[in-house]
Length: 317
Image: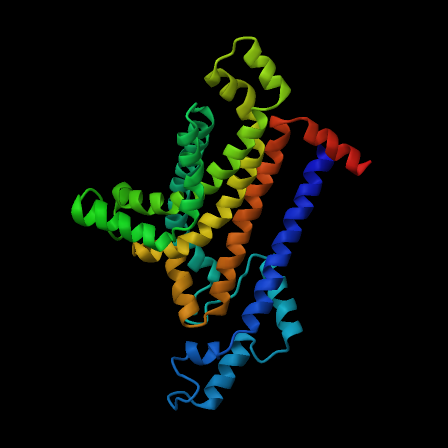
């Protein structure tokens, strides 16, 4: 078990390093001049002198070679310093810290809803005796994946805010203002849970031990929840771990649709003005969330199936 945990920790560190390095490289290739954007001047503007732009480039390190900037930036990041925003001058860590609670609140509300919606569809599809109803339920994930988040959000606002007037359409107005954004964020994620869990359940229900349980007189509900669901949950658990990072990314769209203050808003603003340190900070944070949640999922696997630890021991032998 100890080797298993250490190996997963090493993988997590490698993913974080790769995310930071790839983001740094890709952002460096973007066209435009972030220093000119920070100074409030376009490249053809005369509002800021070339001397002032050169001073700002030196101040923010944009005059250094790529390798030097990468090494210095990585060293600061390892100490928790993600640099300063070129638009506001504030530390990126402080900017993320201010926006983080709203985004975490939204993601924390959306993830359980996604699991609930997805598991309900999968269980209903595999439990029903009607072939037509089963096929209809199993087709829902394909339909849900094709619906963009911003369209779903706008439809929910139109129905539940403007027509029924049940929930506020915009802003961070307490629990009521969280309902529609959370549902919007959860619906696309739930279809992935439903798709993976339903296929896994259908495969497990054909296993010999399940057939034996049925032969002994166990009912469909008992077979599903006591015999099949635990083994079928492993692939779905992996998907839930992936969804944590995906929800953070999708929050960029959803928070802008509902005019919520969070990582989505600061990401949009940072991309608009080419605020590279803030964009990189958001991407690294998203990778950190992804890594931490997936690490927890990996550590939860042995609790569901001890064969995983045994397999891990043999691979290290």
